[in-house]
Image (cartoon, rainbow over all chains, first blue to last red):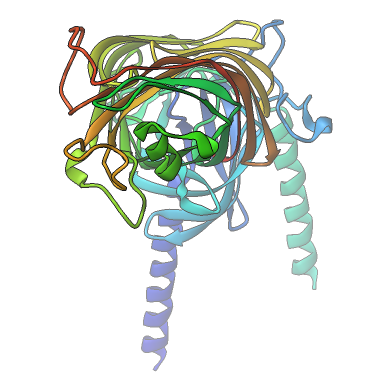
Length: 149
Length: 346
């Protein structure tokens, strides 16, 4: 009986570890399809978030760091884009998919429903959509390897 | 109890430390990086501040009154008549079915109608037919964007349209669909400029022809102004007030060839399946604004300049030839307005 209990514990722990590894596969730094930004995806609790950590053109036309000037909320228009949380509140849904999150597009100040699917270990299909997934756009993000200094 | 306190203190400390790390994070390390697995980068299909793609558009088009001079045909004498107005719905849907970094494919459908109001004086068979049935266009289309690298790309667009004086109860054969297509090879020089050259099989001049096309989308460094052009079909100077308010000044060349069946014996016996070659230049102001989130309205007003409104006795390829029309018509110019509500793409 004791052995059976131990076996159950081991199976449960192994399953949990594999599940954890699969859900955390999204963690890391990713480059957006346009190559204009890199986003670092982190985990906070059971949710996944992504923030801008690099911009190809970090300065605006006045030579100052770019801010979120298109945000519909006027108070947030001075927030720097570097460090901005674009991805929010994603949950791992299994089958290499993270759902129920949102993505923010600083180009137009809009927030979209979003689903992320990992097509291989270095590629994410990030689909922002309005209401139903059909009315959306998929951006393919590529994993970035940081050069060791 | 003690261990609960310990866990709480450690968690709180970790939280504070994470927040501090967040605020002092050194982002410079993320610039020194390369794509994993040797992945390739591709240019995107848009430049900065390009007007948003319309997924669903429901609009209404209205032209003010104008004079129509219809030519003689057979025993029918020419007639000059006033068209009080043109009006009709314009509905379009467009959905991205493949949306990848290395290929984009959009499928769409359109429905346009155009009704005429000649009053009681319509004696000419063309006026009678237009007043009774109007003109309709219903079609499907696709647009493929294929980038080859970070600079070069190909755009292929195709459509099949049923144009004519049909109604839903009295539909016309699918064999009469008019096929249009465009292929453009382009360069995206930077995030504010893309251009390309290509060839179009088009009915925009009222009848089938093959024309060179030039794509040019440019946003000025100030990001307040831009140009959106696909010569010769359309060109617009864009003013961007903010990401949700845009204004345009420019033109569009609209046209198609419409199958005119002798549905109600308006024409003499034996005259059937004519082709109305209709083309018009619309010089206009357009104002577009987000109503709420992804729902936008578009208000357009301008001058409709008639390019062609002639009739052939059958469908054939004239090209730049000078074969005579069955009869020719002239239309004076008119003012027009177009209002639409649109669901725009992310």
